[in-house]
Length: 316
Image 1 (tube, rainbow, N blue to C red):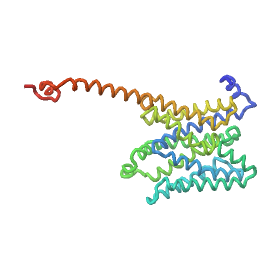
Image 2 (tube, one colour):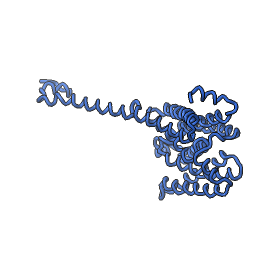
Image 3 (cartoon, helix red, strand yellow):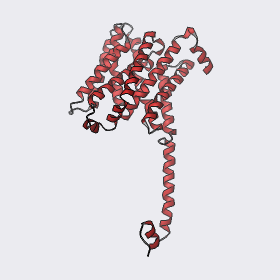
Image 4 (cartoon, rainbow, N blue to C red):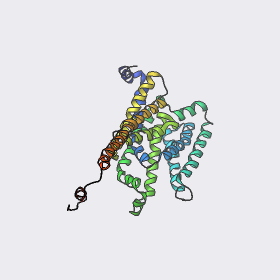
């Protein structure tokens, strides 16, 4: 299918679910791209994975009760995030241990709950791998409003998040409420995950949160630029992934993740300063400079007058 044919399908009234799917995918990618920058900078990928699993019981309960999936997932994810932050205050246990216990328990609870619903197998597949073409109009509005709220909080607390990301102990000494900001960031990660679950599913949602930000991290050293690149990479990958999946009849969520991975590999290889090729050129350049600089020293002893000039002394 050519891009023109895809555009025609997007404008076709009989395929109204297609532009809706594209809107949700792009909005989710933008929100996850911005929030994911802090996830990558703070090494919170495991927390993102935990939250992605933690929202599952809320989604399952909302499905069984015919309620709003975004609301159900948000409640479960926020509750788990708060529990992680609270339990992690006990220094006998490291944060990753607490996360491991809670997210496995939450995911198991979700499986038990969803197993009681009619059409168990189909429902489980929808939650795990997404159902982007079956999103109702109400969820589209919920995703839009929630996404704007998340972005507003991220940019409103940008300075504080940067402070605790760079040096938590110094921030605590300066009186910055580190624990409260951790809670807020966990909640924002939860909301970003919840609005993305329907796009690529519970299993793959971590890719939307981490991969665009990781690719952007390889392309720039500036956080502001990174927070612009990450959502751009995510949104573009969502568009390309939806196009490829629609053209070749492939699973949408998996295709979007593969496109994201391709973008990450391209950044890893071609990044201007931190890409593999750039690092190889830099190493070769340093090796060449070392060889050139070593040549005069191998030629023989240095004249005392020359040594005096280079060391700032006065030749005799």
